[in-house]
Image 1 (cartoon, helix red, strand yellow):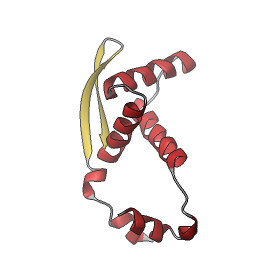
Image 2 (cartoon, rainbow, N blue to C red; image 1 turned 180 degrees about the vertical axis):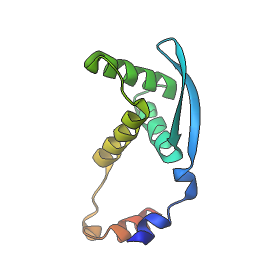
Image 3 (cartoon, rainbow, N blue to C red; image 1 turned 90 degrees about the horizontal axis):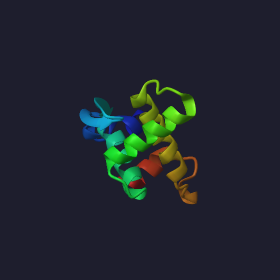
Image 4 (cartoon, helix red, strand yellow; image 1 turned 90 degrees about the vertical axis):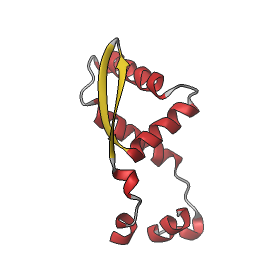
Length: 105
């Protein structure tokens, strides 16, 4: 089991801080590269720049909840939801996560 997690590329879990403007304020967000990659993919699918997508998401959360607590964690959870909904289960690999990861490499 640890092979599944231990052999992932180090780049995926390296952190990167990016600066952007949201709601007229400059801010910085620190996330692991795999999350930045996923957010860029989501933004592209929505036809937006990453900054526009993050601003739109922030504004929608603000409208819905009245505040935005821990935006970086919200982004990580959003990526997990997106990846879970995008996952394709390949029947011949059912029950074998190692086979799925080997197939993805």
